[in-house]
Length: 138
Length: 138
DNA sequence: GGTTGACTGAGAGTAGCTCTCAAGATTTAA
DNA sequence: TTAAATCTTGAGAGCTACTCTCAGTCAACC
Image (cartoon, rainbow over all chains, first blue to last red; front, side, top):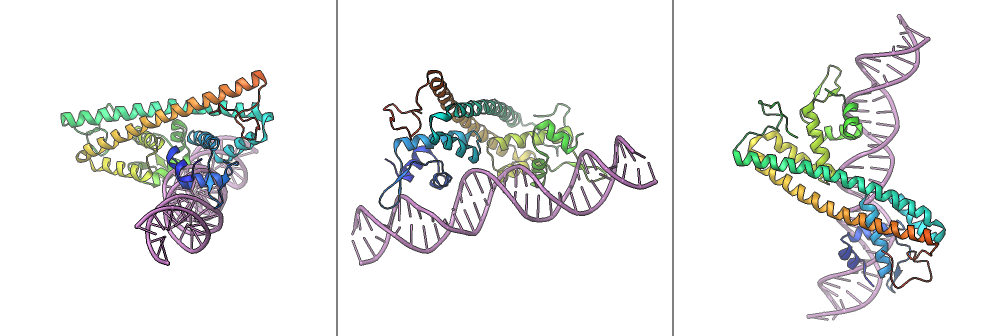
């Protein structure tokens, strides 16, 4: 059993965000103690985990709520949930490829600057540079 | 030379966003035609590319503006820009690892649902399920 | 018994788009 | 040659998903 603060620390999400998600109906099964404080079970943590996952790959909150609601309905929605997870995974894999390309660009830029510094060269990237080179940077 | 629409198509960014970025001072060198329409050079496209890159790895617009301003200043800011790119790359690599883990979770869920469907099993994930199993899902 | 610290919900504030709109220029069609 | 369609512009409203502030409740420690 965890308090909201413990969940926040454990999952690396702010307490504010967890309360916001709770208010959005993402954790329908959380119990309260006698002071009305939320107490998260291990099972509730699983819900936090999947919400964090969906959110981090860009799933809209409305779509997350839809998925949660399908979970609550039960077994009859399994194939629909399967489809959602499948599509989300595909989207995430595309993001991975995109991210790799952006890292490659950052890597190129890093080497470029490193080279400038090492050799005391001019910054050919800067469009202010009057000797803008034929072989453009980036 | 490109119109804003051509840049939007080429870079897969909405025209709205490009105008928003332009208003934010991310493209300080864009020329206008006689009707005040923006005309993007190949060099301007490079700026769009680096802004898109920084943005896509979560760099705040304020920090992007800072980087752009450093570029405008010129060679004296190269080492500072180098540091920014280095740190951004590190952040992006962490995101890559995080994304891989989220994909692994989605993959697990996908297999889990697939198995349920294939074998007509119950959904052990759903907390509504009374026979909540000892080995919890996810 | 008073202060410290965790929690609560309501609601204001913020970032970064995203969209609508009216105005102006151009191109195309009748 | 006038009309309609298309592209652009900036201003500004609207939206999503937080993010933060605040006043209030409760329990635990000195």
